[in-house]
Length: 354
Ligand code: SAH
Image (tube, rainbow, N blue to C red):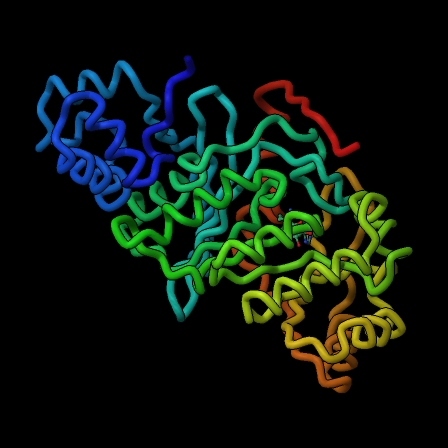
């Protein structure tokens, strides 16, 4: 039987594991506190647990902990980008952004991605594997430990499609917001998806207070297909129906992300169509000037084009902002840091969406 991953267990599950080892239930609470409050990197740090108990845990369970491979700090705005090494040798990327409202960490949900969005660096090598709930938590925990500053917001917008790793994502959300752990408010947690309708509907039924962000990127099904292969699998109307259902069930205002790609989806006509498509929605549109990647010849829209696009949306009564670029000096878009590292160090392959 494969070993269980301790840091991915709920307090209840941990209690039944610990008592099955013949220990008192309060040991489970202590252990949980070491993992999710004190953010211990190893059993060695858990000084109030008996040595023999720690030995047993070491033998019988997996205890995940990242190694720090690279850390880059922006001289411009204090943004930090991290490359973490996992136990199996894979590397993942996480970002810390400092805002006036607190520290926000952007985490990866998979090693690689199989969704294939044309402008995204994370998907170029396909999917290697899902991240465990503990491996998602470790990104937040490591950054809080390293900086000594509280993480107040988390966005699941790094490498990977979170809803393609649904069960682990859910566990991650529950552990991160658990009052016995870091207790991050679910309203401070955003999950971004390329739009898997069945999974969005499931998520709507989970009684969560998180914000859902849909990567829309186009005002029509036809244009969406040019940028996102996932659009061949799911029609835009199905995706939006699922989002509407999410809003009805949770009452949470949706965010729509729209990466502006020069000459592809940034014309005034696109803005008008987008306003028409989202007319009547209680939503926020986040415009992201595309971050050009080496492997594709997409270009960023000019400043004037971006502002015109935003103005049209606003004139149509939509709530829209342009995402401020953070950490410009420390390697650009989603997945680029990891990709640069892999190109230099090891071969890499994975699977793509069918
Ligand atoms: N798979 C999820 C989350 C990861 S990507 C999703 O699709 O939403 C997070 C956001 O960054 C998505 O909106 C994605 O489309 C966008 N993105 C990825 N690469 C980008 C790039 N080079 N420039 C601008 N936005 C990019």
